[in-house]
Length: 309
Image (cartoon, rainbow, N blue to C red; front, side, top):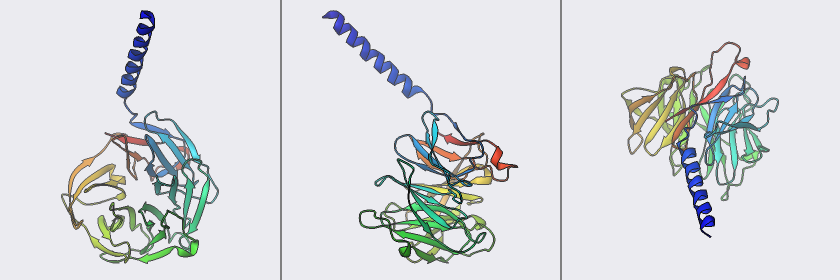
């Protein structure tokens, strides 16, 4: 009887010690991706999960931020591309921006199988680039960096996907000024109620608040810095994180309650940054993929995801 009690007690102590050791093990700062992966978008899933897209293949890699382990969830498909990603937790779906293809794709976030695809624009490249997207309760919004508009995929009351004919093109107006031949509207996020969008306009180093129903854009007046090289965004309360890709840093901006202004309060960086593009948060840490834009022979070099915090 005493031996059984002692054995059980020792077992409990061992389990507690193992749990403590696991908790003390730091998450890796750098998570490798396959050679030639060429990432752009990143998205947080459940627990420690991250999803990272591949620009040239349309594939999506699933990563464990805790261990650094990864595998290809969405397999490469000829003619596809993956830039911005958005995870639909309620319905276990991934919405993926298709870059220069003009498409948006929807995948099963568990199996990686295709669910639907939408041709957002028939404009031939290079005058189109479906860059980023954001999910709200009522719709998914996609930016087109080469055109003066964005796209709306309306969702049903229970998250049903729309027919292709229901996709809307919403012209931008107000403070938005389009410039041909360069990337304009880029990263995008939404307020929790979905009534306002925030986007970065890369060519003007500015942030815009956008009415999703009208497309009217107002400049968010910044003090303490700007959005130079602005790319991916992440909104947490009234704190906006702006990835400044070629600057190899993240601007931390405190927004006013009406989103009309903001103050740059900090810049975050890491020695391993190599042109990071987008950002999301898992287990209290920020994660960014290194796109390494401009590197010679991009299909033969190494890529990685970098953790901050």
